[in-house]
Image (cartoon, rainbow, N blue to C red):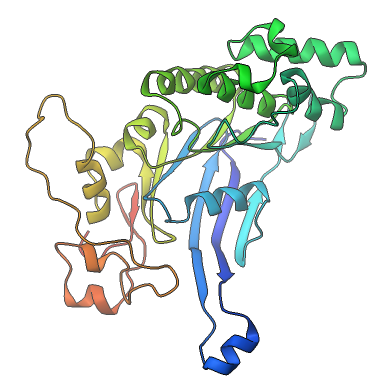
Length: 322
């Protein structure tokens, strides 16, 4: 089986939430149902051993999409499908999928010792035959992520934020996962610690052939990690393609505005266009292109017709003016 076959295919995936008032209150007030369209008609594929990053402002649907991929949230429409992969032992099976959460302080059980946190998936999945082998595996994982075997007996409160995130990564690797969904795994950490965690993730990917779906709002982090990049706005992907192509020649006005926010050491005083306006509500999105109320180059057709994604070289962009 070719490693070039997609490990994940997302096809026209949607996720809607009914945020209406209770039925009786709507009946008495005559209010309509209110549907929050968190993810709307999203499609992409990820190939094995690569990093696919999704970038966007808070509330654009990134985390909802991540939860759909790991099965914590069911799509309202469309599909999320994993392709089979050939494992080193010769078996062909769907990949094991795990998630690294954003907050290392909330994602670890404070009442459990680190050894039990990491050992739980090993025991539940029956990946080791004896308790001795389980503890050996836990110690190996702690050393892989840069911690010590002696940390098995300690509680999460004894660790810094960066160390806690290393424990979260070790817990994800304990399942012998092939595919990791990383939901802003460094946003709660100091900048110096962020670099350590990102370098660790790059090393683990090279060592174990991992595939990452990396969720972030930080384009500097994304550029360090990504093979392929998608820009989300109000539940939709507005631009996607090879990461370097998107960074070098962004097509969508929203992508260009995001890239303008990255500090440039060589041109610290360069002219920048400020991003105006607020993100519209996903409950009542604007007509046409959702970005047109904040876009400095919008035309009349942008307010009337939603642009369909089209290819410009290797980059797919949803903009009338690209």
